[in-house]
Image (cartoon, rainbow, N blue to C red; front, side):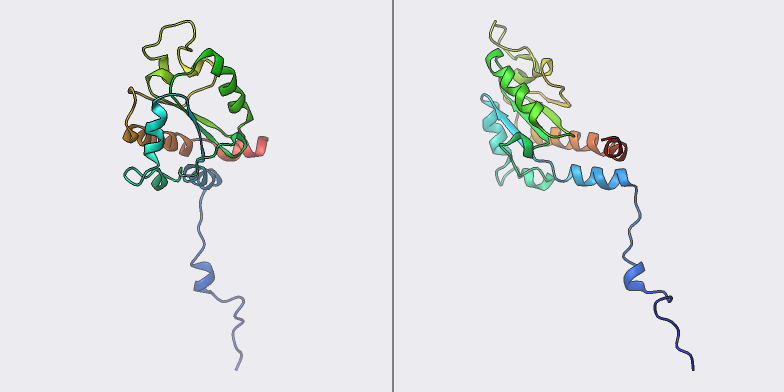
Length: 169
């Protein structure tokens, strides 16, 4: 009696665990669920940003609990608060030090448009120095609004062409 070659036979343990997907989908899923924010807490919005990490709101559900204070370890800058012209060069320098791909969330009225400050010292929106992906309205916005912005940013990341960016680099 000839025994069948087990190497050529169907093995459910091996072939049952194969997942087929697009490279873009896998890379974007990884990027979406492991964002490491760079918190730029410049004013009162930073308190709400800190509240987002508390157990009540739990930003960890979205994979963004690892707040990094080093731009080289971050991929998402959250600008929370009033950006003055004196601080603008530091914000831009930190943004430039972040590795690609990188995203920016402007949190609050001051970061988005200068807020109530129409003075010589206040930058009228952080989008004048760095490209902003998602704006969060409010003065200061609630932690739920920041979580909503994070979900919108994750949706945007899911739609990106990741594989072509990797191959061209």
